[in-house]
Amino acid sequence: MNRSVKIDGGVAVITGAASGIGAGLARHAAAKNMNLVLADWDEPRLRALASELPTDTLIMSVDVSDGDRINALADAAFDRFGDVDMLFNNAGIMTSGRSWEIDAETWQQSLDVNIGGIVNGMRAFIPRLIAADRPAHIINTASVGGFYSVPLLAPYMASKTAVVAITEALAGELASMGSKIRTSLLAPGAVKTDLMRDAAPKESEEFWQSLRGVADRKGKMPDEFAVMVFDAIEHGEFWIIPQPESLDGRLRERTDMILERRHPADKRGHG
Ligand SMILES: NC(=O)c1ccc[n+]([C@@H]2O[C@H](COP(=O)([O-])OP(=O)(O)OC[C@H]3O[C@@H](n4cnc5c(N)ncnc54)[C@H](O)[C@@H]3O)[C@@H](O)[C@H]2O)c1
Image (cartoon, rainbow, N blue to C red; front, side, top):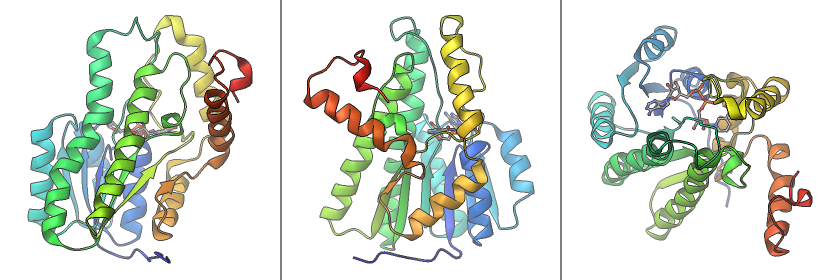
């Protein structure tokens, strides 16, 4: 089926819009004449971004892990613009450390933001979008790390794996009821953003530096990344994986590792 569409105008809601990928998506959506509803818990940066955007932009200080605030965001979006065409559930955080040494509060926050934030977005917007009975598109941000796991990033990998599972389930649920709402799973590879800005725990500093090194050497800039994302949306892709070189080989190796019942620490299982 040819699902190609050209995006010009409409309304996009973006969480985690103050920085990085979210800010890039906001700038590119505005360049496509979209009005915007931008949410983030960093209101000063959100305000600064909004001041440089050419289209009508509503900003809201929101912690995506707070379901009431996301409901308020959905109310505000529909009140202001009447409709929503795209929802980017994009906000996320990264934590590192040995899985048993990360404190309970940090574990919980990773799950509440990276999984809970996406579920809150779906719970707040989908009933309203179904009631509107118009085409709309929900894009949930996971990571290439949602398809495999590495040491020292357990909360991140666990939450991104959950986002892949949730979005796959969502796509089937909406399709089975003949909904006009489409979904995509966005799995970025390295993008140069503030995701790794916060200092790493000492025991994983070396690992953290190597991750930052990959982002510096191979990372896309948020604005070029946003162009790739919108191209994929316009081509009707469910699996939006703009940097397949960061995933496909590892995914095959991981699948082989499981099918061959090999231990994850066996290097043949890693790319
Ligand atoms: N940058 C990468 O290399 C990369 C790779 C794979 C996936 N991702 C994913 O892309 C998404 C965007 O990350 P980014 O790289 O642009 O990072 P970033 O840190 O530059 O931007 C994330 C934004 O989300 C906001 N945010 C975080 N928690 C929030 C919360 N609870 N409520 C509201 N806002 C919150 C932050 O304030 C920030 O503005 C994340 O889901 C991240 O996991 C990024």
